[in-house]
Each structure stands twice: as C-alpha cells, then as structure tokens.
Image (cartoon, rainbow, N blue to C red; front, side, top):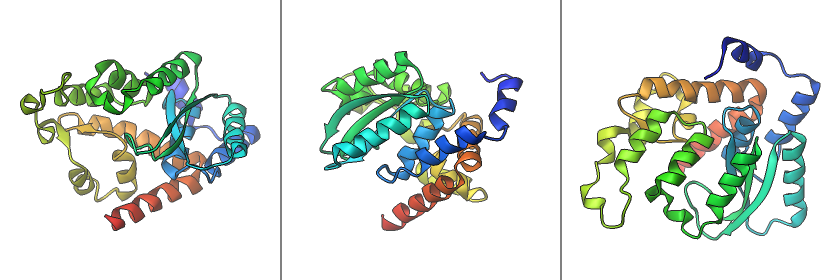
Length: 231
C-alpha cells in the first residue's frame, strides 16, 4: 500500500535523467505499445516484473539495445524462450523478461522456462505470483482463481466466468464516459463484485502513462482502437 508521501513523490515532475529514461522506453519501436506500457509501469513501480516480446527475426543488435535501455532505467533483464504462437497476450517472438528486483526476475524467468507455461491458468503457483508481479488487485486474482480448475477434466464443474467477471464488452459499456481507460481495463480480468475498486488500479496505470509518456499513452489507445476495428 502506498503512503501519502510515496504518492506525492509519484506525482512530482520527472528530472532530466528520468525524462531521458521515459523517452528511451516509450520510443523503442520494436515492442508493441502494450509492452512498452508494461516496461514503464515496471520502471515506475506499479508492476514488479513483466514479459515483453520482440518480433521473430529481430537481429541481436535489437535485443542488445532493449537490454541496454532497460538496464539504464535501473531495471533487470533476462532472455526468455522463443515463442512460435501467441501465449497469454505475448505475440510470437523472443520473450524478454524485465523486473525491478532480482527475486521477481528469477521468479518470472523460472515460470517462463517451464515447458507447461502455456497452461499456467491451471497452476495457482504461477497465476497468483504473475498477478502479484503484474500489479493486479488481489480481488481480481481471487475471482480468477475461482473460475479456472486446477486439474484436467474439471471444466464441466467450473464457475462460469460471466458470473464472477466483467466481460470486455461490459467494460466498454461501463466506461463509455471514460473511453481512454478502456484499453487499460482490458489488460486483466476484472471481478464483478469489486469492479469499482479494481478500476483504481486501472486509473493509476493510465494516469502514470499519460503523465510521463504522453506519446505512448495516445499510441496505446489508438493501437487498441485499430485492433478492435479489425475484429
């Protein structure tokens, strides 16, 4: 939980070095806008770790460039596996793991090294810790935990997602008066009972990105709109 002092520090203007870091992260063209948003949120402490994906076929120089930008921002970097299919929002490509502390870098690297990572919705050890590192509200993780079974063959008995979770279409309807928040609200499953309190996390993310990387804020929203127009 953030103290009033830490909130005040978070709202202060960036100094010259921080502005340089923010520009470096938001301008890295080889990552999707969503992944750049995640990097900035890890840097600012609203997440502790994330996985981002470089498109297949990128030269080693691009990987080195990303690693250098991450480390200049005071974060830690590790190479992950190469994906040939999209898994949990990560596009096919070279997975890169970033954290703001060594413990979580080791943990997220361990999870991504597991051959069964694509089925992690069945493993509470993974989704609870990934939720924590992703900065998700505990209520949202708890609701997710009730939806997904822990064993193969349990799908017939699981609670229907719409009972506990707010659908993406419903999020759009609820946020029609705050449309810029919609792309941020779709970044995780939100519980029906605690939707309003969980929206505070969404607002913090959106406010932080808009404040320190305004170009990325608009790019992320526009990218989301283009994606929705294609489906």
